[in-house]
Length: 491
Image 1 (cartoon, rainbow, N blue to C red):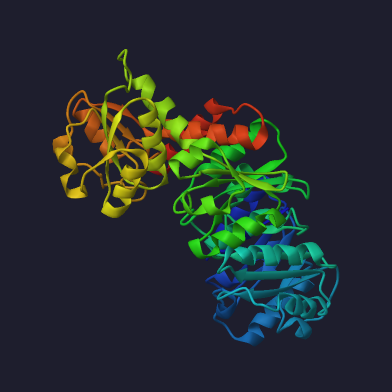
Image 2 (image 1 turned 135 degrees about the vertical axis):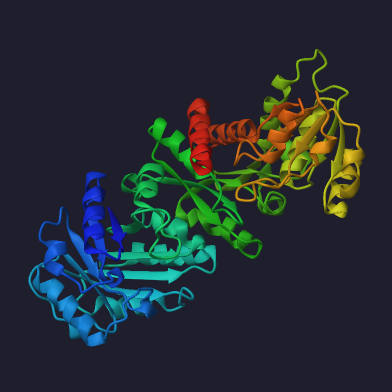
């Protein structure tokens, strides 16, 4: 179950949002009274409530906005209990001051906005002893392994426990806590009005992640990267899982370089069966794999890991996806054979695309801001290299952008000067959000033949889906889902 938090300044707005949420399927709502800007009218908020509620009045130190006296806050909490609310949220330092009354269930809570403490079990035991019906712990994740600690606590708890990590590193724990036994998780009414760091919206939790369908036996897949909040991989993979009616969920894992090794070694404890790999881990992950396909070894980059029979097996779905995107646009008998391609960038995506272009007989020149990195890639795959400031001097047939330049939100940037775009040249931009990057727009105006990053992104994800599931991917659905999402973001 999802508890949706509502924090608004006016009673009327809070009541309206409560009703709207129930119409959308919400079964439990948290009324954050600390957000109200006028004297709290409990009778007005509770008299015709359309579903059960949790009442919470958070102080600033607990992440709230309450600025009245503590005595007044305690009176409000007691009044809510007397009014018969279904749940009351009490911080551990005041729980003893407010006795149980009637049928109201007591959520005894703890919040830490700096870290996930080492003594989680001690804190949990202390809260559980305060006549609790539910224990709630919300802590900031400073490492992806904090998620594991918190979810293990949920699984081993003898009392109903809601525990998750806050912040963008902790998003996965909000989605997965139900798998480990939490009676509910928290979401916000609207994605732009999160009441706590990393809080997802009710719509995201229900439509994208299908929280209520995630069970103990649900298989977990995800994408690892840093940053990761911008990724649309969860959206399209979860849409595909849902379409195929598979008991799987795909979540974002923000993992920094310093945590990569331990995360890969321990993510199986979260039920992880497969991972997509993105910036900056496509090369670093190689040393952590037990087996790799030949393409991974040739390219020197991996974008997919499958956990199979106790082994970590690496694949690269980028290079085939790139070729399947570019080749249909080249209406010449020789295809890519003999074409001169300028590849911008020298990271994992550039390695994969360069490998694919070389397979098809293209002559490839690499250009990147990091000249040493570009030279290493050129030497590894047998390509030319040109310094970044001289990239426009290349006499090219195909321009390939494998840098993040032009990606949302920096949509007004482009990696190649429009003055040097030649009519009739082929331009492929691997950026998929937005689909129509500034490079794509300017290339079309110049009469270039353009391929957008949407095709490569969908095709590489479809191949990942097949590796994860052993089934054919609903590629058309994945493409439609991605296009809707990027169009909505643009609007």
